Image 1: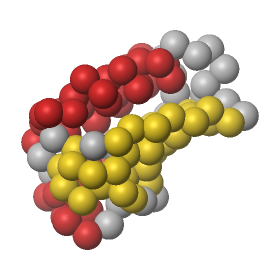
Image 2: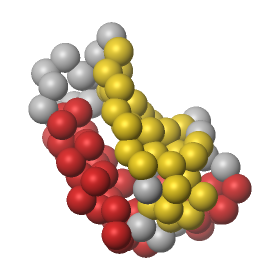
Image 3: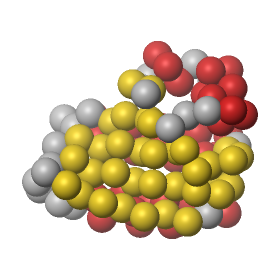
Amino acid sequence: MQVTTNVDGGKATIRLSGRFDFNTHREFRVAYESVMEQVAVSQVTVDLAGVDYLDSSALGMLLMLRDRCEAAKRPVLLSGVKGSVKQVLDIANFGKLFKID
């Protein structure tokens, strides 16, 4: 999986591509921790448009990010959700936990 981050005007985007699974937990954690350390960040978006697969550990990582964002009073948004990724998020009822665009 590839992870890139971008901060623009207080809005951080973590863009993922490839397989989002247990093997990529370190890369994802490093990306979101670096974003969360920036005081100017007021909102976090996880762009899943390039993700073609995610498993239950990826769901857990998204939940950890959500908890961290809630503690910092920063909303988190999941964007670019489609295909099998959308199906997994729907089955897990993530629409009740996240704003999904």
